[in-house]
Length: 262
Image (cartoon, rainbow, N blue to C red; front, top):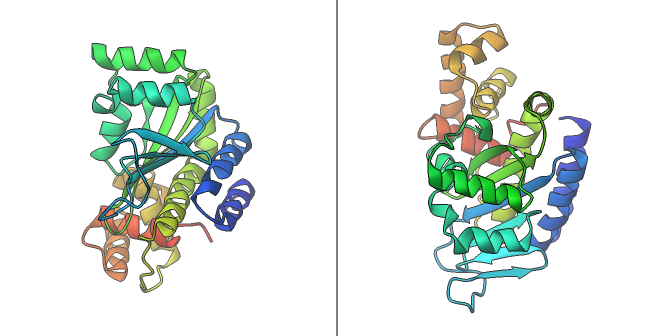
């Protein structure tokens, strides 16, 4: 774990309730020198609304935490004007970041998304007018019970600077996404304390690389092993975790913190 990541995780572990997520988001933004940080829990696995929603599906904000429909929450550095405009304009229906995350486990680099559709171009341009940067990196996060959230870091900068930032901190962002989601689940009362057999260092490394979106071939090469051997490590990790499939194994491993470098 890097020193910067260690500091943020310690701060995250110390917050007393959901309202503390706002301070953590600000600490991440400052520590990694990005313009914005965005955590949005689309689903916390709640059977019934746990947050009071007196506006009939409207947006509410309390102590820096946004709530929507009594089930979804967000902790972010975006402006209130942009958040209201985003939902009023129904950008959530065409947002390639959100929609791409719903169908993927791998992180999304905004520069690789398809922005050619006129509606998406309008969304991108209006986001820029509200201070949202031209570069972004979004990590989809899934909890062991089907809970789903996205974690985004965002910055206005040249492509080369953005590539350098991701090279330096890609793993940090992925791990922060899962740690943040784990805390949100805990405060919402939907966290689970599952027991599993410990993973070996190779098994942890294999799942971590897959979670970062690295292909199996490239991951095997980075670990200095064959693809067949890499597959053995992944399958072994999946069985130890009791996961139904590889994405489920990654979610469980991240949720339990066993992918964190040791």
